[in-house]
Image (cartoon, rainbow over the protein chains, first blue to last red):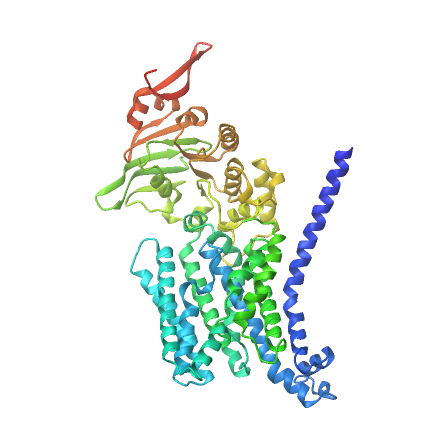
Length: 352
Length: 263
C-alpha cells in the first residue's frame, strides 16, 4: 500500500521534474531576445521599453516614430543595435563552437582556439594596428590570419598519415604559440605611447567601435555556421565517442569533423575580428550549458547558442555602464563568469 | 545460406608482417561464435574486418551473399554492429542517450531521434533488463551494466550480427554470467554473436561454436567439444593446458580449462 503511494509520488515528481527541465530549456532559448531588448534600454541615457520597441519598428511603420526624440532613435538604431546584435552573435559563436570542438576532440577542456584561430587573428590585428590600419584593415587582417593559422595547422597535420586528430591538435597548439610569439614581437616593437595600448586593448576584447559596417560578414558567417552546427548537433554525440565507434555506427567521422572545423573556424575568425580576443566563453559556457540541460548535444548546441549570446550581452552591458570608461570584455568575462560557474557547479547533477 | 562468411582473409598493417594469414569462417543465424587465441593472434583485426571498418588486403567477406563493401557504411551498420570494450565517454550521457546513438545508421546526417526512435531505445533497454536505468548517467554505471547498455545500443541499431570485443574483460563472475545470459537469450531469438575472449571457460559455458586462432591462422573451428581439447588449447596458448571433465548420466562434459601445473 505505502509502496504504491510512494511510487506514485516518485513518478509524479519525476514527471514534474521533466516538465521543469523542458521549461528551463525553452526559457533559456528565449532569453537572448529579452536581453536584446533590455540591452537597448540600458545605457547612460535610459530608454523605456515602449520607446525602444517603437524605435525598432519605426523603419517599417514610420507612424511609430512620432513622439520619439531624435536622440532616442539614433541611440537605438545606430549606436546600440549594432553593438547589441554583435554581442549576441559573438557570444553565441564562441559558446557553440566551444561545444562543437569539445565534442569532436572528446575533450571538455578545449575551445575553438585549439587550432590557433584566435592566436592567428590576434597577430593579424596587431600587425594591422602597427601598420596604422583602419578598423576595416584590422578586422580584415584578424579574419585572414585567423584562417591562415588553422590552415597551416591542418596542412601540417597532413604531413603525417597516422593519428590525424592528435597530430592536428599538436599542430594547432604549435601554430597558436608561434602566432602568440609573433604578437609579442608586434607589441615589443610598437610605439608604447599609442600603438601598444591600442594592441593591448584589442587583445582584451571589446565592442566599443562596432558600427553597422562590421555586422554583415559577422552576421552571415555566424548565422550560417550556427545553422550548420544546429543541424548536425545530434551527430556530435556520436563523434564524441571517437572515430572507431562512429565508424561502426555507419559514419565517416572525418568528413563531418572537417566540416565542423571549417565552420567553427570561419565563425570564430569573424567573431574575433569584430570583438577582439574575448576569452573564457568558449571554454566555460559549454560547461554551464551541460549543467543546465545535460550533455546531449541535441539540446546543448541550442542551449549554448542562447547562453553564450545572453552571457556576452550581460557582460557588455556591465562593461559599458559600470564605470565612466569601458572595461575590456576579456577582463569581465573571467571576473563575472568564474563565480557564476562555481555557483552552477554546486548544483551539478550530471557529474563528469 | 550463411549470414556472414569470410573467405581467405589476409591483412598486414606493415608490408611483410601479416597479421591475418588466410582466415575463413562462416556464421549462421542465432549462433554464438567465440574467437579464442593469444594476445596478438589477430582477433581484433579480424573483428575490424568483419565489422567492415577495415578492408582486408585480400580475401572476401560477404553478408547474405553480398560483399560487405558493396553495402554503404550506413547499410552495413544496419546489419552488423560492434560492441566495443568497456569505455567511459568524455561526457556523462544518460543511458537512453547512449542507446539512441544506435539509431544513427537509421537517421540522416541532419536527423535527430524521433518518438519512434525513443520507443525503440526503450524496448532495447527493457530487453537487457535495465528499463529503470533510463535517465541515469552512463558514466556512473558499473562495468556489467555498461556492457548491457552497449548491447542494448546494438539492439536499437537493429543489426543481425553483434561483434563483441572481450565482453568479459573487467567484469566479475556474476556480471559475466549476467551479460552472457542476455546474449544467449538474444541468440535464441535469432541474433548472431561473434565474441572475442581471453576466458576459455566462458566459451565452454556459452559458445555454440569456437574458433581457435594462432598467429593469424585458424587452428581449429567447430563445435566446442571438438575445439576445446587439451592438445588444441595447449597449441593455441603455447602452454600445457588441462581440461577437467565431469561425468553426468554417463555423458562426459568439459567443466573447466586450466593451465597444467605441478602442485
